[in-house]
Amino acid sequence: MALSNNVIGAINFVAVLLSIPVIGAGIWLATEPDNSCVKILQWPVIILGILILVVALAGFVGGVWRVPWLLIFYLVAMLILIILLACLVVFIYMVTMRGSGHLEPSRAYLEYHLEDFSGWLRRRVRSSYKWEGIRNCLSSTPMCAELNQSYSMAQDFFNAHLNPLQSGCCKPPTQCGYTFVNPTYWISPIAMAADMDCVQWNNDQTQLCYNCDSCKAGLLANLRKEWRRANIILLITLVALICVYLIGCCAFRNAKTEDLFRRYKQGYV
Image 1 (cartoon, helix red, strand yellow):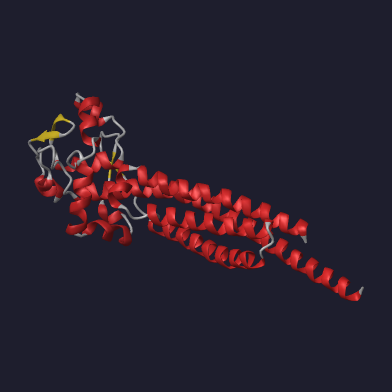
Image 2 (cartoon, helix red, strand yellow; image 1 turned 180 degrees about the horizontal axis):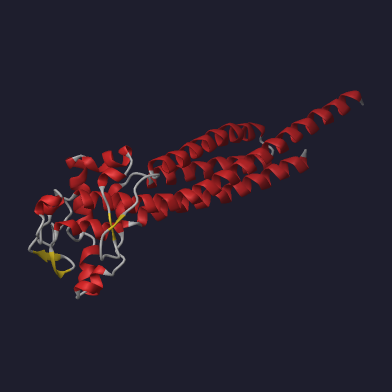
C-alpha cells in the first residue's frame, strides 16, 4: 500500500509540473499587446492551469500522506479538468482554422480580410462598442510609430515583412492606390471605391486605419497565430495529463487491491 501511495504521489507531482506550461501559455498570451487589448483567451487558460495545479497538489498530498478522500477528489476533479482542457484545445483549433493573408503585387507583406476568419472571431470585433476599447488600446502601442523609424524609403517599406497588425492598422489597403510618403502617411488615392477601408484611412497618427476592417482582420490574424502556438502547448500538456491520469488510476486501483488483500490476510490470521 505504501509503495502504491508513493507512486500516486510521484505521479501527481508530475501533474503539478504539467500545470506550469498551461499557466505559462496564459501568461504569455496576456503579455502580447493584441491579446492584452482583446482579453479573450488568456484568463480561461490561466484559471484552468491554476485549477490543474490545485487538484494535482491535492492528489500529491493524498498520495504521500495517505488521505483517501483527497485521492478520490483528485481522480474526479482531474477528469473534469482534462475534459475541459480537451474542449478548449478543440475550440481553439476550430476558431483558428481559417484566416490566412493575401499576397499583393510588388509587396512582401500580406493583406488581411475580415471575412476570411471564423464567425466567432469576427463577432469579437464587429461590435462598435467592443471595437472602440480595442482600438484605443491598439493606438496606444508604438507598433505604427516604429515603422517610421525603420523605413524611410517606399521600396524598403514595400519589401518589409510586416506583422498582421502593422499591415492592417498602420497603412491603407494596397488596392486603394495611395502614394507613400512615409509608413504612416499616404496621399493621393486613385481607387477610393476599391474598398470601404480606403475612405476610413486617416493620416492623423491617432486614427490611421484603426477603424478599418483590415485592422480588425490584422488583429484576428495576430490572435490566430498566437492562439495556435499556445494550442500546441495545451495539446502536448493534454496528452501528458491523460497519460499521467491513467497511470494514477492504475496505481490507485492497485493500492485499493493491496489494502483489501492486507485486510483479508489479517482477518484470516
